[in-house]
Image (cartoon, rainbow, N blue to C red; front, top):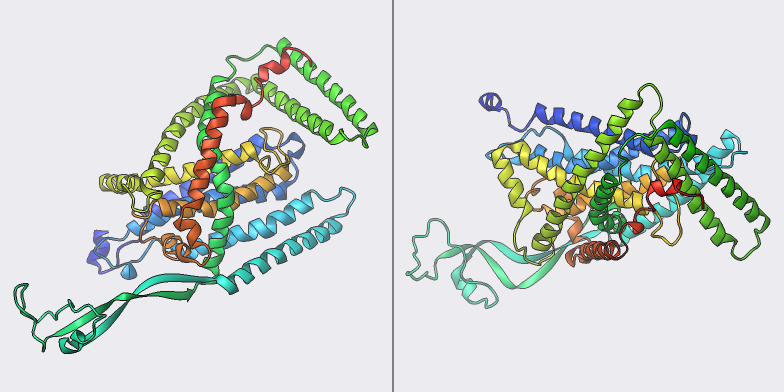
Length: 529
């Protein structure tokens, strides 16, 4: 930095920030690949590569979108405080990157993922060209519908309205001002005036500016189309985020703790493995018999209810098989796999402890800073500023942790609920037995939530993130959009998320583990139903 200043160059460029960005991006990509491998169904292994690429890229982009906010903060803080922002050479062009990320998000959610889903679920009897043609037709119809809605809303209400107070600038004589009763005569004297607080201003003295006390006006401006699209994405994401994050803030750390407490204690013997495998095989035969009975009674009025029961039993059977493979690792590296398996449970214990802490701090921050009309305390904003004073990376790192935790609990809530909240059970996410169609749908839901998480963090950390590129969008424009400003000003989404969180707490308190997880996997091998 000092060398750049001596050369007369503007400060702000930071190679270390680029290095950290590359490393974190690769770590996120590796984590998304791990999720895909951990959750994918055995039937999709070594095939369906195009949907897998779309899923990994989409999930990675969703997490990148949230982590771009801390990157924006670090990029802004790289410039010295004595340098004007317009004169600073920033490390990254964040405004252009934000536009690119949001547009890519939109294309993935409404074009690429629907096309991939329609193609993946196409009739197996269709040829490749027939699948492509059908997928394009469905995607085009869906896309036209979405474009019409956005364009019509943008043309009608795509404006921001800023409340303003009239201020007239110029030099006016006090003789004129005294004759205008509506104006404030306690004006700003010129710098050359030698008056004091006890002296009387003469009528010949002049004012450099004077304001109107009573006339309030609204300043209406057309917002840019990319900003309006970002605002619509945020609203759509909030409808999902308030549900999934409201559930996940409590259920995620509890679920991680339950998985740790219910971990297997030792590797089972080969004879025990064979016994349990035989039980699973017998249950599979029973399910086949039940399916044959269902085929004969397709016109029975209870057919749909019975079919849903069979679906649940199939899901439990697949989960039992997955759990059995974990407690009896096979192959030459079986011992290594077991050690890694157990380390994963201890990682869940740490995540549970950290999750309880972060959830409590988040709720306290919402109560102290976000919900009151006048914040009671900056809370986390002050903590980040203090950490920056110790070392610049500490504040940005803590900021990234709180933002990333929201994405983690939202994804956890999405994986736990899926679309079960919407009356019918569709596209569930289960470790070791998730088809690519479920991956595509739930990844699209995660992508939709990403802009809402960014907007939530912009509102929560308005003090610390002031001056960033994304705060200019969500803090200075979206909050004043016609039709949307009331949702944000009255904290409707925040109250909705806290309400969902409260309902989740009630279910967890009265029904406990059964709400989120089925019976103990060990119970599957005790008897045959």
